[in-house]
Image (cartoon, rainbow, N blue to C red; front, side, top):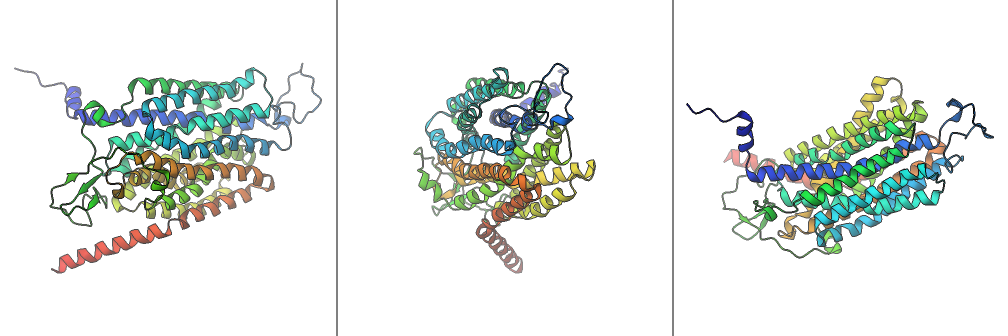
Length: 496
């Protein structure tokens, strides 16, 4: 009697060759961008170590100091304007990132993604390590650390347009919101791992808080060089269907409302795959794609809020709740954990409803009062702190995750492009580049406003959330109008 096939082998063979490749690419790109965010996080953890409350620190007996208030601080961050200096470091990175992002997409379309990503990760690893080496080389020059931040910001721009373009090459539009919602958790996973790794070394040798993440992203770059497959056709896999062409010659999205139908009804025509164009789109051509400008401006304010939390939340928790640097860093990871859940929920809801803009708008509206409550009652008890951080993280990062992934991929494969998938990298760069302007302004404003009180920082964040929602008004109206039309047609069919 022939023995049945082993359960594990049955599981392996139940998936097609295409499915294995798609899963492998999804995993690889998840790993790569986790490494990118992991290497960005240490600066927010180390801030509270560079400037400390020295009156609470036990001074070594053999240490002769003249200033009891700043003896434990790292020069030049031992001055009263230390928050402004931290803002300089944040903005050195973020302004360079915002400017570089607009050019990165153009390069990403014209260069092999495997080489582009590998180079970017190796160089990001180098500059992250150089920041940490400043501790061991006893460097106290603000110019040195600002220059490292500028170069690291430029190198980090290689990541996002390239990984989104790669995933967009492999996956069609059908369940894009859910797939990319899960996939985009790499942002929060990277932030969490970066916080935990930096927290291990921050109180003893803060230089290692940068060197270890730097080595990790450099290793990811080597992995990318040896294993990344840019397009399905490179390994003889089937191409994803982004759009179909009807017999009357009109191009329609493959899935317009997330439930497998077009305009609420099942199409009976035989679909024809749109022929792909190889010509790269221009910057202004990408701007003319419907929805790109609105989502870009929305992301600018949504990312302002998200990155202010990314760079200032550990210091806020340390100052307000009086946690030690490591504990404050660990607590801040709850905001990112909430972001994972928020991104997945945003993707699921937008897939089901077909309303990307409406999903973002509802979450942004809900985020505003939650930020207000967190500032006023968030530190009353540990349970309230945990719950509010998770909730705020989900509502703040949900729209941000949806716009930078599913929305960018939708617009980059918009029906008006008639199959030109090479537009994806440029569209992604425009949206994320505009968002990065907000990412640069948020920490800058936080550094300028925080000396007047943390309440004012939160008022600024709430205002940014409301503005982000307002930019989506036209698109939300269009989606609601479409839903009303579908309901009317459905009622008409039932009456017939």
